[in-house]
Image 1 (cartoon, protein in one colour):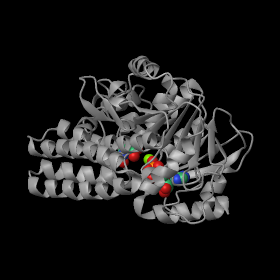
Image 2 (cartoon, rainbow, N blue to C red):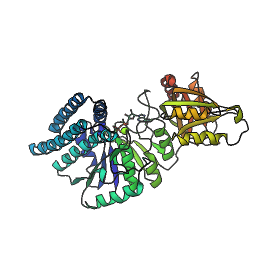
Image 3 (tube, rainbow, N blue to C red):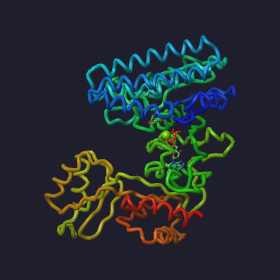
Image 4 (spheres, protein in one colour):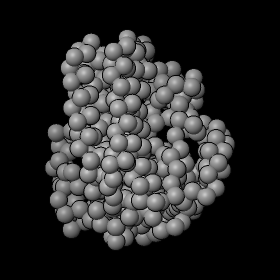
Length: 437
Ligand code: ADP
Ligand code: ASP
Ligand code: MG
């Protein structure tokens, strides 16, 4: 069985939803994972922020605006009055839930419950559309099988057992529709897999049922060799390995949620990235095969903070790095990049929640310099040791862009460079021009 995930733009209008129905109906049993209609989760974040600031009237106004948008949406999505009425009834319930959430005392749980409504709306509307068109489809709530543990990591065993039970209940269903993004947590509360998490849902579902393939349908014809939001004339890459795709996703390629490659890789399930707007385009196939050599793509991750830890006593002192790492571990902050010299070590982090505590501890035995607004540029490919010149190509391309840190050799798939965020646009353009044109 295949798992097909459709992102926000792919279900962004009644026309697009109908188009998705065309793509998936081929008589093969499959699981279809949907995101919220594009723009909805952002709107729900706004509503939640207003509720948190106790601006209830404004929050209710935004809810009503959103409700109006969906009223028009369902009018175009369904053919018959009966289905329009049924869908409207579902919407009224969901929007009542939203209003009552905004009306109750705000907690972190309120926010998660508000955000969950986007995927609940899209899957309900889509399922009803399939039923109206006589497709044998069922809607299974992700809240019945998706679960994260105390550490926010997925509970693989729980997901597998519960998903199996849920789908076994519908042996004849051609299409099993479910929500991306949303999950229960270890306390049985509604939670989510972070923004963009529907890709991760699809991958977890694919891994749980050992799917034949996981397809991620989006608004572009696969993984491009540079970030199309910043650089013109990027090109789709036909094949990537799991490791290459994971590096690119982790280091900023928005097309895939950073964690979504791992579950597929663990079960060796091919991931195919496809374009809903151009279904015939080949897309990108991600498998364990390492094809081709040399540089394949670049990505960039913003919001990075660099910490330089300088200590005269580091010289020849064994155990120094352990002390540094223990500090980051104590404050649950993961390190992305690391470089060392004889008297100093530089690391980068993207989560600065505990930075003050980290600085306080490190200052007990070293001098600290902190720089914010940094960007990691990640150059990915298959760098075979015998083949020289990859690093040279990258440095030559970057010309006069000041490099703050360089990491090479950590894996054979990645060269990471730390630059100031203000140089990112220029750096990405230079890399495209010199590496891919
Ligand atoms: P969806 O809503 O379908 O999940 P996303 O907006 O999350 O879609 O991801 C698709 C977008 O990712 C593309 O429209 C593109 O702008 C952006 N993107 C960033 N880097 C890349 C890349 N290397 N290749 C393809 N798309 C990328
Ligand atoms: N709807 C969620 C978001 O916008 C999840 C997703 O689209 O993948 O972040
Ligand atoms: Mg996405």
